[in-house]
Image (cartoon, rainbow, N blue to C red; front, top):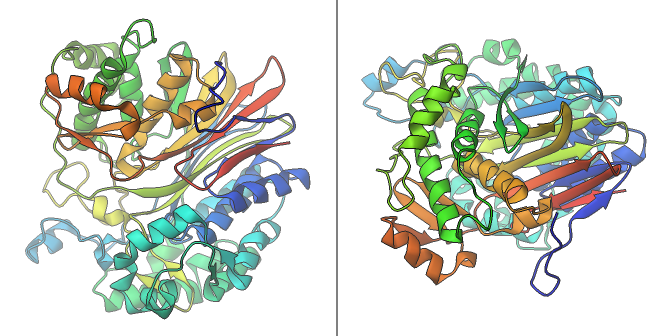
Length: 529
């Protein structure tokens, strides 16, 4: 890995030997390290950290959202967990079409799927944890009960997306104290959320999917016209599933299978594995252009084909086949742009991601989300549960693989990942940022394996995102690169907001060393010990 430039802004990669955690919030990272130091394993640390983030990053995640994970227990094969929520059993696309709907409104009760995160935590803890949730949730409970200081990026997002919670009187009363979002450094307290976390700590999944919490959520959603029932909550279960994988630069990259968009990341990686993207072979503009073209191809496939696996019509192995990938790769030219994929459905934005490796070699790659910033904006006030709006990702087009139906999972963007090398876990990593996540995986891995960057430097590289006919670029690329891309036919815009956020831990097996990175676009950090 190349040495960094110590004159330019940036930070060194984190180093550790006995364990490491990388998250987007300092309180989550230090919580994970505390758990590891106290004898907990990687799963314990990840769950304690994500619970903290559900308190201190309310625009990004919460217990009213979903969770995916890839787990590599020491010496065992990796396994994935799909903790994405299903639509209520009474949900019906024809019924919504009869009401004149062509799309599910992001802030409506119809956008709320059954939250999968708490069930995921319970199942993952039981299968791979060494400490109970009654202990692991205590740091989050304490922060919700006694308050926490709002960090800079959290305050920025809170202010930027305050209109979402302003539309629900209960959410506004909670998240806009005194009628405004808290500023950086102000203390925020959420006692109702603390009590719900206590219920989960005492009773496990029953503390959320049965009793007062579920009853309050269903009552509120029904009052808003939702088809939700207590049975939908009581019956919900997430699933352990086999990861899917593809080769890139001699590594095996593992993703969760559909309904997640990890398949799109693998398609991009397979396409770009046929190009030399080293610094000696391509210019910066070439690299951005090839990523954009691979993104357009993969996202066209994603939007047409990826859905709940029960309704997908084309098998994953066919999509990743040499013939399919070769056909996509063959359409890419270095000097011109292919017609862009145009997205007409809901925009997928926000989440948190956590990497943890412990002293025994257990590896966890975990992601938790409420979809848009502040999710649906619908709050169950007595339980403090802010509800996700993943259901707005369903299609209402008749016959579409992702068409809304009862008990179905929508196309999902949150995707934890794991790189393997010679049968060993090499790097848990993930990229936040909704639609960008699959592109972010590809961008990050290319900078590591094509350019020799460490995880921190690969995080800090300027990002681009070709989506919906526009190539959005961070200003770090400069005017010359932008002009080159415009000449090739790209419609280029400078990014108004930072693109995505990433955490990763690279495992140097030969030296017994952990090397971590956490994105400067968020408040977090990687720490090892």
